Image (cartoon, rainbow, N blue to C red; front, side, top):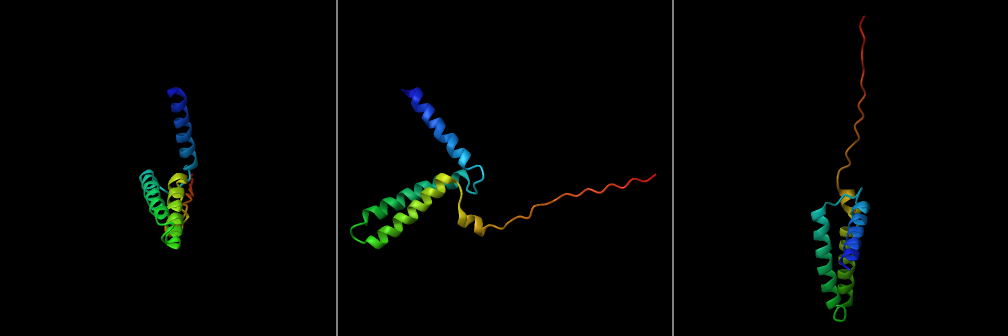
Length: 97
């Protein structure tokens, strides 16, 4: 049984790492995003009957944070960060006889 469980966990880890190959969120940010998102979703779910508008916004924000942590990419962070221009190296060689 533990062999199947270890295989499944390894499979999930590799899928997450492959999906984050071109991501712009680091590992520690991903972990914190998932934890904070889960907390915010839980708080929103508790307020669902008392104040549905606040609860809906909390659930939406928490879900977005969880998605950010799981996928490893954040379009808002990408828009804020400066784009670094790609450098092209051109080499000139002069031969003198």
